Image 1 (cartoon, rainbow, N blue to C red):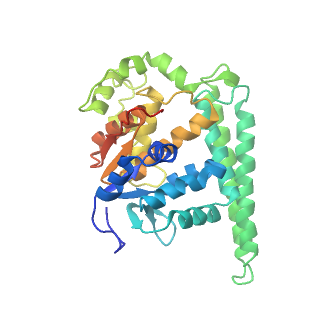
Image 2: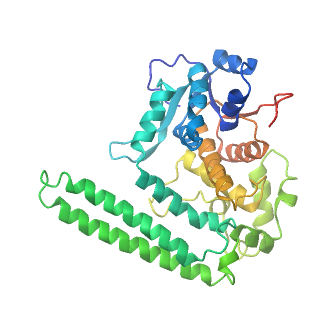
Length: 346
């Protein structure tokens, strides 16, 4: 990890899964917390802050833990054009200040857009029973339209500074809205070719049933080379064999056709992690429920940003198995440590 902060003293960096922070909130004075503070530089991310935000009034308890651990903020480095990179910034930022900044900079319209776009994936996991694709598409179109309007309103506030900018942005947002609507229509039409009952559709279950492979078979796979062993099972199955799929295509980490570049390592972690969830390698349970689905998406985010640290600590066995498998395949050097604390409720 490229360090950009002189306050960092060189101790091994330790990223904490949310369940570790939650443990310290529930059980005060654990010696393990003091050990972490003394031996490691604890780090947290925007994904951590996002999860804390979802706890509502309980948020300050988690921030207090991070402050007591003298945790530093870790985030992906963005260019001047707000493009993501393959580097991370580590900075000493008080968790309370970081949380305030995070909440201030996350506009409700962006949160609404993120939630709306996640509904298709939630449907794929068997959620949104009773909702058809048109209903979900309508929510996404409305959310995207709200985002476009938000952009236009911000431009209106400064349009006198750049003559003609408002007209150009208006044309651009209309074009983007039309493209978004068309993409949804095309993807829905393609889905309907293969789905009989879209009201009760579960893409994940249908996929596993078709492949006749799931947790029963996959959870018996032992390291090393977990991903490669999984691929040896799938590459000969219908849908992969005749299309001559590569392991990179199977994992969704081949060259990105949208950005015309190789995916960054932290992006690949998210893709591999989510594929393992879909196929059923130590999958997260009950993902058809919104809360569990959101938690699983955060887990993938934690695995990604933690790839910039030296150690990742967690109490979630399923998360650990998937993350270790993804890291091993991608040659991520982060060590994933399972924390077992006796006589403590999960």
